[in-house]
Length: 64
Image (cartoon, rainbow, N blue to C red; front, side, top):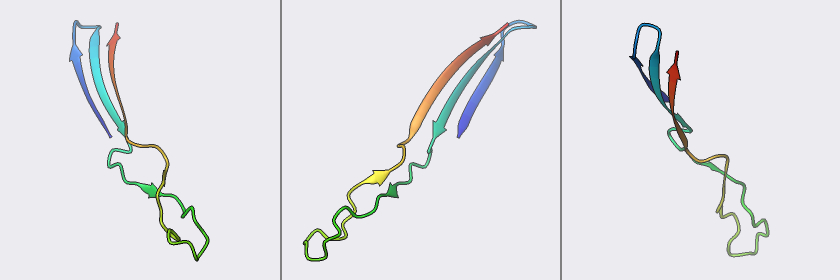
């Protein structure tokens, strides 16, 4: 997901602001269960996620 705005400074120059989000909805991807012993009381519990969390970046660009 991205949001951007461009302003004209002069006829040949502009300023651009941009905000980007990766994994904007931040939906978890669950890891496989860590305990596979069926007699363990914690059998089948999923306690970890895999992948990257939500990342955001902003930028300001002056073009001439």
